[in-house]
Image (tube, rainbow, N blue to C red; front, side, top):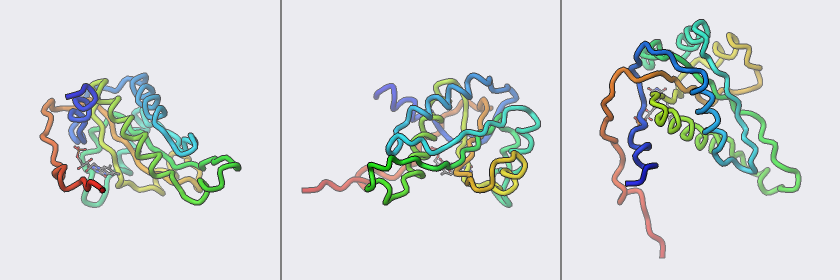
Length: 177
Ligand SMILES: Cc1cc2nc3c(=O)[nH]c(=O)nc-3n(C[C@H](O)[C@H](O)[C@H](O)COP(=O)(O)O)c2cc1C
């Protein structure tokens, strides 16, 4: 097993956090890892809004709770709100203008972020459920921007690494000939 696979096995959605605060420099390290991800035409069409100050964390948790899901977010010690930004595709690449690659770009960088967090001993959970309007209004995130995802962070309260529940590889691959 490669070292990379080991980290991928260790990364898991963490929904139970200890009281230990998250160091600001570790969040920056995760953002640096995220920004090493590839993006279409190297446009990096995203921005990171970091809720690390206790008041900001409380507000972010409030608006990441859904009607029935994400009640546990109150335990998280930091949140990184990821906005989807304009992709500045070069004018001399007209074919790349025909598609919107930004969601792929965001997905790639979010995994880098979470893997680096794992290496640093942190737990993360990617959140697709949140109140976008309330988050934008409270944190003065400009209205035309959309929030793609939020990452909840903290030190895991439990050390157990769950067995990964994934579709069998043989169902995922078709060999062409
Ligand atoms: C785009 C996306 C949105 C997600 N949204 C949520 C969410 O709102 N709440 C939650 O608890 N988990 C959320 N997850 C975590 C997934 O449920 C989790 O990644 C999946 O079940 C696999 O488990 P693992 O991350 O522990 O390997 C999300 C994951 C992704 C990639």
